[in-house]
Length: 331
Image (cartoon, rainbow, N blue to C red):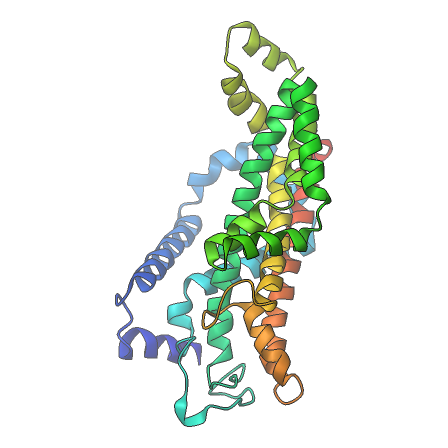
């Protein structure tokens, strides 16, 4: 069935190079295939990684986590499906079937059924993964950039700068997470960029506190004192000596925050303040499906499962990375 869908989309549908998203999907697929071929036939290229003791210990610890490996495989499939959605999806996500504007149960024609406009839910879930992952990663990037910067300044300079920055962040964090996002979107208006900003500027205290605590430990190390003694600027010390030694903990936190961001974006979309119709978004699909929960439960089940599986996978991967990158395990 999957080969038939790809044949129909690539050959009959002439989607090989028909639009920008198809071009990006094609290039991404070629890169992934080349990377897999190199991994299989040119294993010696990765010998330097295998000889690295830190990499070996990290990989050994990660291999102990069955949940982490399962989460990594699931997320790899989700990412690949999102990139290749133009080829994998059998129908356009916004194509309305005017001859059958009614919900139909899952079948061999529509694997996840259709909604009340006759749109294929499987295609909409695939395209919804793009929105969830894209907005989730962008929001965490904004969140990490602001939080890490404030944490570096507070931890490195200390004193009044530390007190002012951390007290302001604590006041900001005292506002309930979802209410703050709702207020920001209400003020800025609806739209994908505004959603990224709203989700990105909430929860700054997580990255700020983590970065500050790491900086307080690192800034008294010998190599930092030596860099300061030879006249290195504060900017160079922070971004060349301090930040690289904080990256493992920040990666773990960022992985966990991506799952939270996806959940928040879905919640905002469910409330009508996130991604707007007809764009495929899991929260929007849940909002639409609640009206037909008895007659057509598949309209809510499949986007709901997509949210649960994606968020759970990010959380499991974050837990596995936390154990693998724990400095006490790598000594």
